[in-house]
Every structure is written in structure tokens, then in C-alpha cells.
Amino acid sequence: MFKKVSPYIGAYKKYTVWAAVLMSLGIVANVIPYFFLYQIIAPLTRGEHIGPDFVMLRVLAVAVCEIAFALLYVKGLEFSHISAYNTLKNLRISLQGKLEKQPLGNIQNLGSGRIKKIFTDDIDQIELLLAHAIPEGIANIFIPVLIIVLMFIMDWRLGLLSLVPLVLGMLAMGMMMKSGFEKMNGYYESAAKMNNTIIEYVNGMEVVKVFNKEGDSYKRFGEMVRDYRDFTIAWYKVCWPWMAAYASILPCLALLMLPVGSYMVLSGTLALDKLILVLCMSFAVGPSFLKALNFAGKFPQLDYKIAELEKLMDHPPLKEGKLGFTGAGRDVTFENVRFGYEDEEVLHGVSLEMKQGTTTALVGESGSGKSTLAKLLVHYYDLDEGTIRIGGQNITDMTLEALNEQVAYVSQEQFLFNTTLYENILIGKPDATREQVLEAARRAQCDEFLARLPEGIETKAGDGGKQLSGGERQRIALARAILKDAPIIVLDEATAFMDPENEEKLNAAIDEIVKDKTVLVIAHRLSTVKNADKICVMKEGQCIAADRHEDLLKDCPEYKKFWDASVSASTWKIKEA
View 1 (cartoon, rainbow, N blue to C red):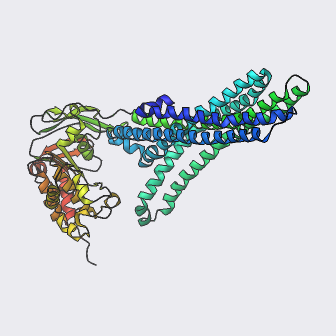
View 2 (cartoon, one colour; view 1 turned 180 degrees about the horizontal axis):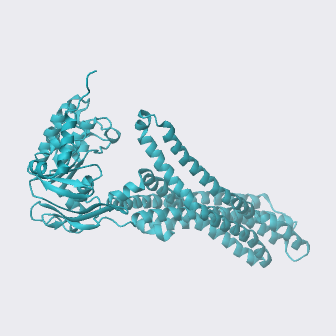
View 3 (cartoon, one colour; view 1 turned 180 degrees about the vertical axis):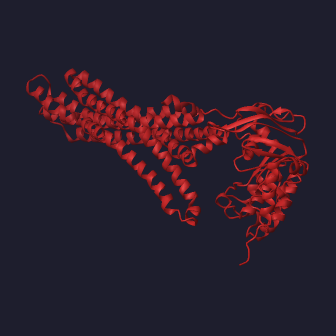
């Protein structure tokens, strides 16, 4: 497993090595006092006289050893944690880079709860491996092995005897790990489901309360929590007996050594002072070996966590070229585009051409593939078949950064970070001046509501932008797109939060964005796109017609049906009693 983590350690690998060396030296210093203890006890068993100076010198040596142990062990822990936390930093940065290149659908399928668990809980568990299990495990294994070798040198029979509890303890540990492996997958799957359910429950609290769904929502919440509890208890039930077994057996080396060694002394086959020395050394074996095996018990969990991280990072990334934008102009063409979510195809050979400087609208029923087609232009997903070109250049031939410079995407749900509105707009062009940001806000019709805020454009947006109304969040998102000034604009129901109060302002903001741009727009109000240069009618994942508004009314029954429904909806009102 160290091989799986070591690529992320980099230059800090030497800190882990030094940590193991220092901790090993520290444990040696902690074992030496047993020999000083033997030097005090052995003469007494032979009836020899020892003076106070002799004893005090050994006591002083023990104190020096304990101080050395503390200093060496603490310094070793310092080095191991420097290595560990820098490794966690490298791992998180690497994972973040991989996630950025994943299709958006893969990230959404994981769920925010599971991603949060991977980025925080699972990666934090690897700190145990680097900062403790590896250096402390090496140190705590090295010393018992050395002591057992010395026991064999003292008396081979006592050396063999010392192996009995160690072998039994390791067998118990092996049985625990074997039993735990069988339950581990269910335990971690239940933990991931519970995390996703908790986050969904909290995020959907408003809907739950408004529609009086506390019972149904809490029922699912409770089921996931109970499943996690049941899997956890089941896992520990199979592990507990073996944990108790090795925790009881390993420290009892002295209890086994004492009666057997005493018999050997009484029978004249072993000197008493040798037995005393071996007994003193045995006190250092059990605790060190027990600590090492306790770390070993964590390795199966860590192995699973690292495997999960690697599985996430090994998922095929979005296809990406190495070129900048080399297209001739900003014409956009969709050529026989096919795409599906998992096993269900939702776009069936769509072909569409958008001329530079024109506006193309996508209309159709919900689920007809409008938003999917728009997201494919931004390269949120890879196509199953076909190509999308900008100025004749396949979008998969250019880097994601180059594509992002060409296309600005504004959806109905624009996420705002919990920082200032100024910084949220600045995302559109990080190197923009303050004057450019303020100008973008003005053109996006933000001045009116910014003037009402206590700190103006320096006001915090709140968690997810909740300090603002839907229309206000939309105008901040439009200001971000204006500042970016990309030549191609995708508006995915960007007027979804339009109401009589802000309709004029949103329309004015959108007019500022689309000036001299190639525009792809999706709108639920057909009246807002009737003047588009081309309207593409989507039905069941296919483009069944593409023309101007007037021609579609005459030649496309499906579009006429949408238009009549739109007109009817716009004139709808509650009848007076």
C-alpha cells in the first residue's frame, strides 16, 4: 500500500524515513532501562552487595533513556506529520485536477456527500498510514524482533517460548482481517449512501417543509442511518472476538515465561540471572508488538479508501486536445451528434449549424434534449458519436481552457460562492480591473439592487448566493458572462427567474451579452426567442425542424402547438367569482 501513496509524497519521503529511524532509536532508548533493571536485580539474586551509588547511577541512566525516548519519538512524530500533511495536500490537489476533467455527469452520479467524504474523511484516514502506521509500525516491529533474537542468543528454549504468544496473536489478527474484509464493502457503501442522503435531506429542507413531506423524507433519512448502524455493528461483531483475543494474548509473554523459566531454573538447566534478564526483556515485547498489530488492523480500511480514490481518479477524463483555438471564425456545427446518459440515448443523430453572429434558439418539450445539446457545446460530456466544431475545429482537439475562452455558459441555476459579489463577477475574467468589473455589473443591470445592499458590490453572496433573489443571482451571473466576453454564448433558460419586476432589467442584461456574439439560447417562453435567426424544434432527442419563427408557424405543426400554448399561457388569468 505504501507504493500507492508514495507517488504523492514527493520530496517529503525523506521525512517519513527519518521519522521511522528516530522512532526506532526512541524505542531502543525505551527498552534499555530493562537491562539497567536487570543489573540491579541480578546481583541481589546471587546474594551480592550493591551500594547506593551503583543503584543511583542506573536510576539516572534510566531517566536519561526516558528523556531520550521522549525527544526522539516526538521529533519522529514531527517529521512524520510534515510528510503526511504535505502528502494529503498533494493528493487533494491531484484529485481536484482529475475531477475538473471528469464529465459533469460522473461527478453528479457520485453525489456531493460521497465526494465530500472522499475529499475529507477518506483522505484524512491516510494520515494515519503516513504519520503513524508506517513509521511507528516499523519501529514497534523492529524492537520486538531484535529482543527475540537476543532471547534466542541467551537460551534458544526461551526464544522459542517467546514466539508462542506472538504466533497466536498474529493468527487472531489474521482471522480478524479475513472476517472484516467480508463485511467491509457493505460498511463503506452504506456510509457513502448515508452521507449523500444527509446532504440531500438538509439541502431539500425547504421543499420538505413546504409540502409537508417530513415523514417521507425522514423515513428515508432514518433508513440510511439505520443501515449504516447495522453494517457497522455487523462489521465489529465479527472483529471484536479476534480483537479481544490478540489484545489478551500478546501482552502475556511474561506470564508464560515465568512458570516455564522457573521450572528450568529449579531443574538446574537455566541460570536465575538469565531468566531475570529474559523476563525484563519480555516486558518490552508485548506492548510494542500489540501497538504494531493495532496499526496493521487499520491497513485493510486504508487499502479500501485508497482503492476508492484511485477508482475515482482512474475514470476516463473528458477527451481533450493540446491545441489552442485555431478555427476560422465562430460558426458552430453539430454533426450527427449522439449522446446518452449511461445506457439510455437521449440525442439521436442531431445536426445543426449556427452561423457566426447569429442567434439560434432550441425549443421543445421537457426531456427533448435541449439542455443536453447546449451542455455538449460547453463539453460537459463526451459525445457517443458525431462531432461539434467551432470555426471548423473539433472541440475535442483544443484544451478545455481554450474552449472555455470561446464559450460562456449561463444556466438557470447559477452558483454563487460565499464571497463578495465583486469576487463572484471577477470569476469571469480573473485579471480584470475593478473598473471592468463595475462596468460589467452596470451592463448586467445590477446597479439597482447593489445600491440597496449595505456593502454594495462588496456584500457577501451567502451560501450558494442565498442572500440574493433568483433574478438578482441571475444578473450577477450575467455580469460574470459579460466580463468574460466570450465570442460564443450559451443561455440555458437564463430567463427562468424572470418576473414583471425584473423582466426589463434581465432582458437588457441579456441584450448586452449577445451583442455581436454567436448565441445558442434555450427558453421556456417562446416570446423571448421568436426573433431568433433560427429556431430549432427538438422532439425526443431529434431536431425535427429549424427555421425562422414565421416559417415554422406555417410549416411545423409541433412548433405551432408550442406557440399556441405559449400565447394561451401568457393571457391566462384567474376568473373573477
